[in-house]
Length: 393
Figure 1 (spheres, rainbow, N blue to C red):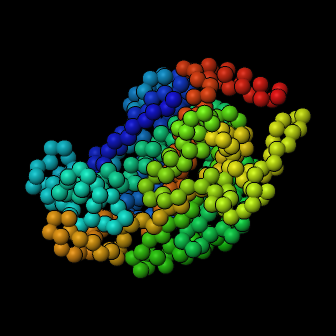
Figure 2: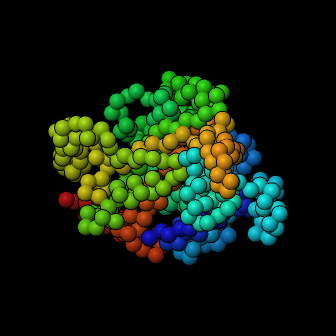
Figure 3: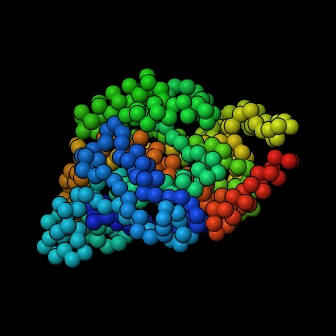
């Protein structure tokens, strides 16, 4: 099983990731990680931070001669803005230096107020630095390693943006795309400023972002993550915490600003009759058991069923606004406009990349749980034996 920990503050020296459980013998380089880190920083509506940072991962342990060792992998991602913050954020900073950027005006929608109450901080910077979505860069790095593992089994995890504000793809139930359709759209997706495959919807999304930015506001939206070639049998129905859909939903919900998660049809399933929801089962000598629809989103009873895993997530508008909302000073209790940190007008395209990462981590975990093995060779042996069994049913 993969376990990982991240550490670091938004304006600290660096982000640190330690990941345990990756089998030995997996080919891995910083280039595999940096490609996803770059994708996370792109997107129409991003703020000034993305003009400063150009994230690069440095692997410091767990990999030798381009292959994993089976021991914990450690890496760091430097914060290039550190030189402007070291007097304030350094562990050795004096009280006077720390006071220079003290925050006492909590922002509505952020962890500022509740974090200050919980940890008894008087300076809310102690909360917002870690609660910041900057931490997701380390999770994307972990997800890139998980994706590299999954690629050994031809499991692909992809995403696109369905909606930003009121603008989106008006294609009804076309949430289910075949892998070959994704492959055709890959370049278009990655070159789209909002990571949307529909040019008309893309235009509407960008116009919506511009309109919000003009008045100092922000926008949220919906992104979709799809995992292809996931074998049947990952996860389990026997305990609540082993259900694959539950684990994926929890991971996606843990991304900052995510307020709802759907698997397959999701909320739409509640508005339909059973005959319009459940995926009928068929059998073919060449294909084995299969379904012609995928309303379940690739899981039944908490177990992968061999169909693509489909996850949708709703992201709220970023709460740091150029036109701050009303708040109350944490210390004096006087009414003020909330503090403003550097922020984005919209980060939904980037959130989709983070969504890919956490879904990849959970699928990789379920794969390791099912097939075990201390090395890639051992893992592949168990995987191949399972797929042979499934094909002969």
